Image (cartoon, rainbow, N blue to C red; front, side, top):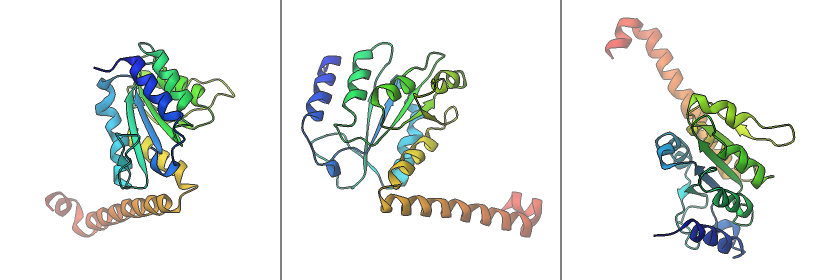
Length: 202
């Protein structure tokens, strides 16, 4: 069973590998506990929707050009792992991090933002009571955050960051948005044309 030190050693070894950026994860997803996973799954879903693949082996990238990875990193129980993750993020090829945490002391997103700076971090408050903790950064220490539980939006935002340098991701985002618009148009037409009773019965 791996220890926290084993994970730190892994991150540091990967950072020293000088790997080709096209083979390393583009997005990192971290959360304070595996109990946050049901909420954080939205980020996985958003990235998968846009054609990203999950990379579980740093040295064996999947066929997809764009990938993401994930770890459980507790700011309070394993601060040394949090520091290692943030400090090695750039050298490991990450371009953006999605970080989620719950509770009133949801410190993982903002601490990761401080450590990994200038890599952008998108914070996900897992619960409503986590919002103030996640967004409470002082001037000069930025974090981008979504509303409580909206990790799907965090995944989309991570893709938007990458889209500024990758036309392929921009095209996927535009296609996704067009599909949303088309869905609204269909519903709008049905409601108008069928009336409320027909719309309910469709």
